[in-house]
Image: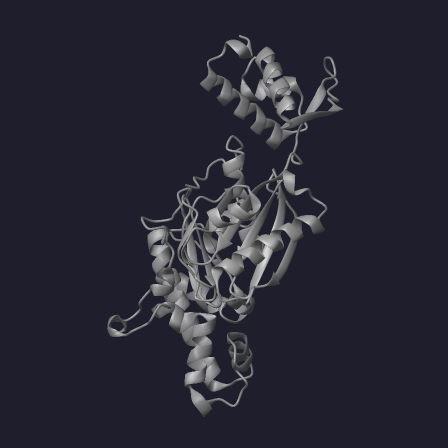
Length: 399
C-alpha cells in the first residue's frame, strides 16, 4: 500500500514511528527501518522522502551489510534547530543550549539579577538569552523553543508562576511564558525547577529506566518531585511535592511558620542558618551559612553538631513518610546541602533500613548530574511542544 493512499491518522502514526526509529537506532538503512517497524518497504520509502524534505532526517553513510545491495543510511537531524533552557534560582541563573535531540551543547551561569520588579527581571532575562545565543554563534531565527525551570508552584499547561520564590521579584500570578514569548517570539515552556530536574534525571541521570522515584532538593529551601508508576506527579493545584510544609509533631500544628513551612524552617539551608543565629553566643564558630554549620559540626562544635543531627533526623522522617506513599526505586538528593551529604547520608540510610518493611529496598544517593538536571529536564519538556512526534521518554507520562 502506498503512503499516499493511507488514512491521514495512520500515515501520521507511521511517520512518527519511522522518525523515532531513525532517532533511536540510526544510522540505519531503509530495509532495517521496515523490519523494525513492520511497515512495507514502499511505505517506508515514501515516509523517508517526506522526512528528508522536512529536514528531520538526512542520508549519510553506507550500509556495510555483507548481504544484498548496500543501502544509504538514514540519520536523525539533531541540528535542525535549537532551544534554550533556563534554570532560575535565588542566587544564580543557568542557561543551556540544546539541540532537537535534547543534548546540551553549551551552558552558562550568571548571578540572579538583583532588581525590584519582574518587568526589569524579564527584560534582563530576555537580553541574557539573546546574548547566550550570540556567544554560541547561533542565529536567533533558528531558535525553536525556550524552556524555563523556576522555583515555586507552576501551572505547566498555562505557563504561569502561581506562587513563586520570595527571592524573585513579583514572582506570583506571573504569566512568565507569555512575557518571554513577547520578547523573543518563540513558544516558552514553564515548569517547577525540582520537577524539571527529576525529568532530567530520568533522561540523563540515575533515574533512567526507573518507574518510581523521588528527587529531594535541599538547599536555601526544600522541595521534592515525584515519579510514580511512570507518571510525573503534579497534583490538583500543581503543588505536589511541596514538602517544605511537612509537620512532624502535634505541637507544630499551633505554630506560625509564615510562608516557609515547618520542614523548611527547621531543615533548609536558610532555616538552619536562622536557627543557629537564634542560638546566640552559645557557639564560638563563625556560622553565617548552612555550609558553615556543617564545617563547625565536623570540628566538634556542640551546637552545630546538634543542629546537623536534628536536620538529619527531620530529613529522615520526611523521606520515610514519602517512601511509605511512593514506594520508590530511587531517591536522589540535590541542592546546596547535598554537597555535605557524606556527613549525614549514612545515618539517613540506617534510619530507612530500620523503619521500612522488608520488601522496601531503597537507598538515598546524591544526584550525579546535579545542576545539569533541570536543564536536561526542561529541554525535554520544551521539545515536547515543538517536536510532539518524537519520543524521548517512551514509558514516562509527563502530563
